[in-house]
Image 1 (cartoon, rainbow, N blue to C red):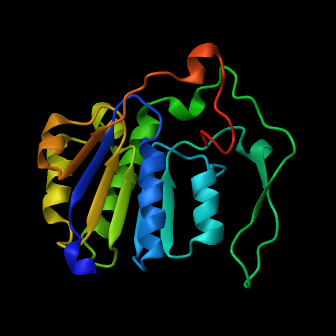
Image 2 (cartoon, rainbow, N blue to C red):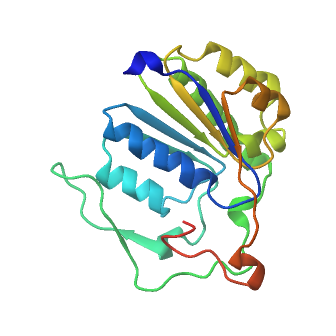
Length: 207
């Protein structure tokens, strides 16, 4: 099956569902016996549903986050039971923590740039390793938009990736040059979103 892989996907736009779409393909790939690696750029919240699901239920998925950790993360969850017989199991505190006006994890400063460069180094390594059938680089388009990564760098990564590694790039503001190099390009448009009515991100739906 894997000799039919090797295409490049871009999921972009200002609507909800870019990461969700990529995670759905990752789960589908695991179901078909593929090895999957997910690198999240500019995201450091280990309490997110996709991260927890991969760590607990999808051992065929290697999943790394490279971004500022949430300053309220330990209030969001607690770690329960780590032993040699089962993967980590994350158990939430009873109440959700309201982010309020805190935007710490979205501050795109020198610290965030360092996380992005670390993520990109890992991305170059795994996409060229021939070990993985599908690689997801989540939010890499945003890292490009903030100029933490140069377009030419990502073009080289695409050129140098393993021939049979399927590659997914997500995030709003995708580069036209990268879209031109890609085989799939989908733009998710926001028609309506409850955030506009003051509804904040909800556990299990947005994270």
